Image (tube, rainbow, N blue to C red; front, top):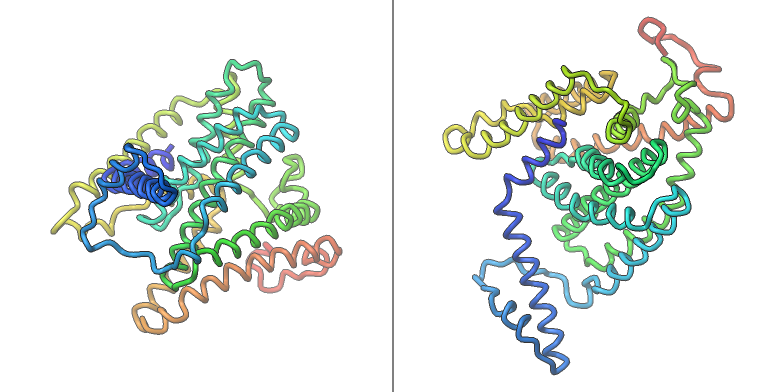
Length: 376
């Protein structure tokens, strides 16, 4: 509730920016269509009129990429159509999902893309969890009273929600990549080709990694095997499952106190966004830094263990001390070092899974030396 409310409030509070962006996109589309028609010796009064409304102030930032360096329209249009069609086929045969629901998921992915891109650009925190939960609520209503069994409805809820949230995630990542490429002067078409190659590799690599980890740690997907020794708590999975049950199973009873608490905290998170945007301005702007990030707080509620919170706290303390005494070296090495730690932990997890499958992991040949309370 808090994630959805705070994220939606952050989005709608930027209504002026959103309206300007939509208006500008529409005008540029009309200009492009009108120019294409004129080049072919044709004319359309509607598009010509809309194109004439574009006002040039001289302050526009021109795209430095040449025409031959741009991504052609047919590149992404063909890719979009193929992706949606393939998704309809796979979702139908894999999860017995009606093609209409797949199209609805694709539309939600398009809408949530604006949410992810806008909030990610403003707050540097992408609200993918909020988008996922919102999509689950939509599909909870779409599958209600439709003749689906509860188990089938939950399966559709999870699959469609994953498609919608995944689409928003990819859109945000692509925009970030293109923005970085723009600042570095990279031709868009080369970035597009690189992204296509990376996507093709990831399509085959991701399932392989999933199989690797689930083979090494069956407790990931089997609740009966989950215990205190499971190295993966997968808190997000629990949140997805809880929402799917809540919106599809009429027998799920949510305690009144939990419902009231969720509503109150949702209102508080929205109120903070409004206060920060309209009241904490000018001389009062200095108080903004003391406001909590409700998205981070809500994420901490979802995660059952304080591992990530403690890691974030330790990293923030180190960064604050480093920035205070040597801002120059922080600018050079800070983010690169943090990225290295993140990548190193991910690669270490893959190595650990391989060692577990080989029977030579820490549980077999490891030691508790140096571990607090023999917790390793």
